[in-house]
Amino acid sequence: MDKKTKLKKPLSFEWDKGNKEKNIHKHKVQNSESEEVFLNNPIILIDVTHSQQENRYLALGVTDKKRQLVIAFTLRGKNEEIIRIISSRDQDKKEKVLYNKLKSEVKSKK
Image 1 (tube, rainbow, N blue to C red):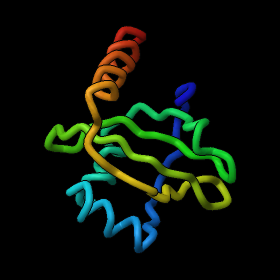
Image 2 (image 1 turned 90 degrees about the vertical axis):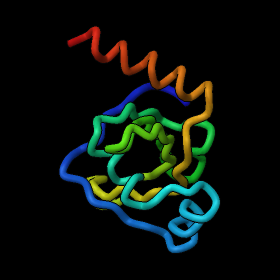
Image 3 (image 1 turned 180 degrees about the vertical axis):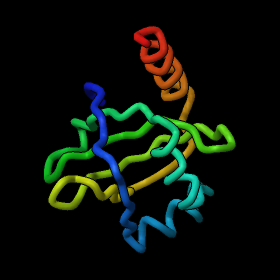
Image 4 (image 1 turned 180 degrees about the horizontal axis):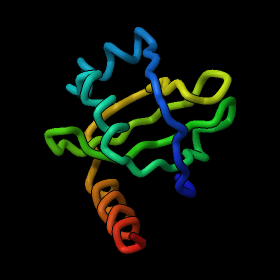
């Protein structure tokens, strides 16, 4: 993970069939939950480790029911307005600490 970045709006979502089903079966994350995170002001980080062939990002955020998720994704489309979700799962302990730290930094800047 590296520096924070922002997404352009409006956004739409694109799903790969294999990843779409994997998130539901392996991680118990519904596709609608993944999309909710992007509407709830997530922290967006550039995923330098996994960005060899294309830029990849991580979204740390919450669903409408306050479930804390981490979502790996890439941007598609002429204006990078399409979010293609690669994986979506619950945040682990370290990610929760990072999310809360970054979220409090954002709040203190307002």
